Length: 537
Image (cartoon, rainbow, N blue to C red; front, side, top):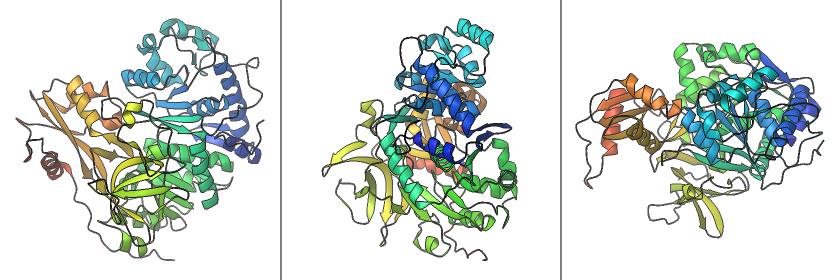
């Protein structure tokens, strides 16, 4: 077994294994796997992947639903010393093939959902990619291989590793995909060194222990899920996947599983408030709460704090390109409201060891307000396609920076507050969406002559509204066509036909006018910056 001093990301699981060999590592519904079993299984799978025909893979795709196979598959990838590339099996087949190719995935781990997607046709486009399908017996594996043309790998004692392979700081641990303006997703390479810095800060800052129970609200292809997973596993704690039906009674779900650490997009709060279940004192087990990916509103935060009076509530900020989070602010009814802007909780202070710049429209450094640039040890290794990084990863003052596209204001104490986007990105339930990608898909997959997509605030989240030129179509027809090429989060909720797009004074499409129209029809007004009072002690 590799030494505990290793900086490899998977050394965190070994720490948890040492603390909690018999504890449940992951629970997904009624399906569980304990630390000892997960470790042994991951070693067997890692060995099978490394022994794949054609030689050791370069990256492992985890094409699954939200089951225990996904979690053990990620661990097996890292045990093999290879990047993990989690891809949800409910993504369109064409997009899955594109992502696997971009990440140079040369072996797959699949569950029932992933195997079904491959059996539906895209197997022929994957060039004989070897597949580990642990749910299949020998006969099922042969039938799968014959039906898809993809060799089925078998995990067994003959190929199992004796221990995990180590990894260097510059080695890639994860490849996570974000929405891309060119119509294809952008793969971000996160290294073991990036992760080591982030998780060292988490270990120093928070008192997680084996007695904690972590939620897993985000999909495994989101960076917040990476944080949940490896914070839990390093502590020897249990991780509980949150199913969609849990939001009908979130306090009940938290109580049922004894969850103590929660991390999600803020839209979960307004959803829970609408159910009428988010009552004062309804989540007494929570100790730590983190919200990120969307603007966190005062009133929502106060409602959550009252429901979880024993929990610290932390607003976190950070783009995927900077490895999960770079800023934090702890909610205080008095201080947060005093510092916040437009009813939104501050982003907070920068992580130790990093640098930030605010640049004005001329590209000159601004003292108090401008576009946020970030640099430091959590800066990722870049995109899979270097062209995607043009204008985003930049050299300045002897440092390599990431240009976030977020407009922020710096307060007197150094904390940042969020003012809005400088480009066409929006956040939909914590998922970063390039509007240009959705527009590209509409023009390619639907019989329209023009498309503009905007984001509007709805119940403290964002919904996508599409305007189009061409013959009238039913929304269900758009949804059907777009579901073949876009993940669910990128499909607009509303569609409006226009005879022509409005133009601004520069004779360009007036996106502001269309956003105003969409907001008038479908949006909810931003909350007033209301004062909130402290929860009772």
